[in-house]
Length: 18
Image: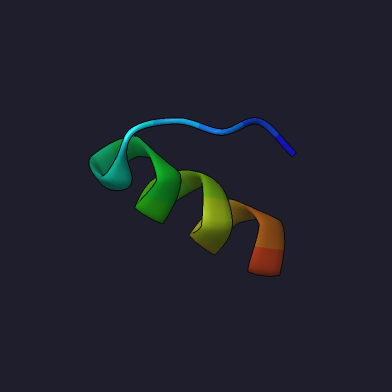
């Protein structure tokens, strides 16, 4: 998992959960 900014991380986490 890549560590991005809070805003981008929200999208990344959501995509990962999906």
